[in-house]
Image (tube, rainbow, N blue to C red; front, side, top):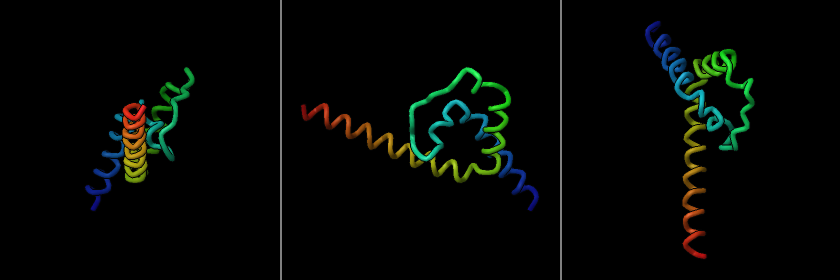
Length: 84
């Protein structure tokens, strides 16, 4: 049982390290990136990694929702440009 918990936490930590630059996509929906220079320091990276370590399944679901919203926007924009 311990190996499953360790794998869960390890996957979450790696997920956090990989998705740090795109973390705005894992909120309640895609939004513009308004990152301040202080927002890209070691402390914010560690905090994001810790959040992802424990909550990565929820973040994956919100990321899929953001992907769905962005793809729908792209389709809507392409149909509007062809209609004009």
